[in-house]
Amino acid sequence: MLWAKTKSHARYNLATSGVQHYPLSDLPVSWSDLELSGPSFYGYPPLQSALAALCGVDPECLVAANGTSMANHLAMAALLDPGDEVLIEHPTYELIVSTAQYLGADVKRFHRDPENGFALDPAAVQKALTSRTRLIVLTNLHNPSSSLANESSVREIGEMARSVGARVLVDEVYLDAVFEDTPRSSFFLGDHFVVTSSLTKVYGLSGLRCGWVLAAPDLAQRMWRLNDLFGVIPAHAAERLSITALQEMPRIRETARRLLNRNQEIVNNFLSLQPALEAKPLQHGTVVFPRLRGGRVERFCAFLRESYETTVVPGSFFEMPDHFRIGIGGDPAMLQAGLARLGDAIAAFADF
Image (cartoon, rainbow, N blue to C red; front, side, top):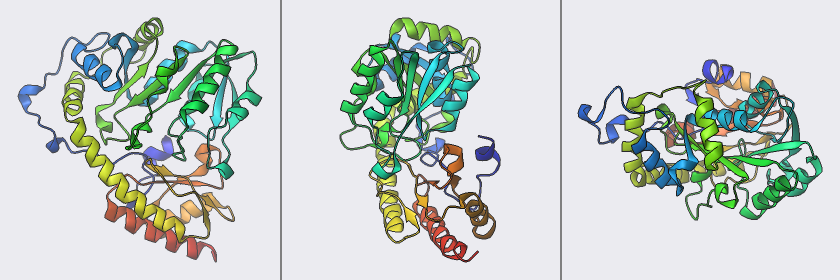
């Protein structure tokens, strides 16, 4: 996160992970719609109802959180004690691993194979699972590759977890980027599943920090009380703006769908013309994670930024140092220009 906040910005920023910011001017908001304070103690009731309707769950199963990162923190804090074994996919979003380590968990890993498009493999989970495992953590869509896990694989992993008395935490913040036949949430596979998500990535509403956890009611209550240590009471104006955004969700979703479909075409065309990069065509999502043949990715990323005013995310942040992550959620013209510079940099770097 330090790199993302201080080093990722450039004239051509391909290091973002979500859709470009949705403008406040496009929401039907007036000053009279906003108040600075309101009855938000263990959830603001109108927002709880709106989010529960979006997710198709009972409001008692939903815990509002400050974005998906805090949702993941709350979920792991509620599910893990120091010394508990947690099994986390590799590669994955760095804050997931760091949070588990911060909570004192004994972190183990299972592999998602780049040769298989980073597909979720229950056999890899089974191989790493032990009688000490208390939590299995995965992302769907996978961060950093955007690989979609099918329900049968997730369900199979859930049965493995149940067999040793563990739960499964699924970060689904990118799942809505599957616009056609969007899979149902893993939450509906049983009460041994806990799910996190937010409006931040797919809808360009990061500034609202509108995230949530889906969990069984007793576990949800535990998370609400834990949140007293972290968030206490959220910004009420953001809660009210979130309700307005949820009311406009069909239009916001369509805006995101059109943007990502166009940008998916752009990035897939680019990848097809780059023999130095290994990556399967992107089918959905906001990011793609190619391998750079020949390695030296850290040097390449620095060269790209310094000489071509363009940034991508080094794969070392995902423990895959021969890869880098490209964000495709920006303006199509900027994406196309940034990818052109990326291609030029790859050609020049071969002789660097």
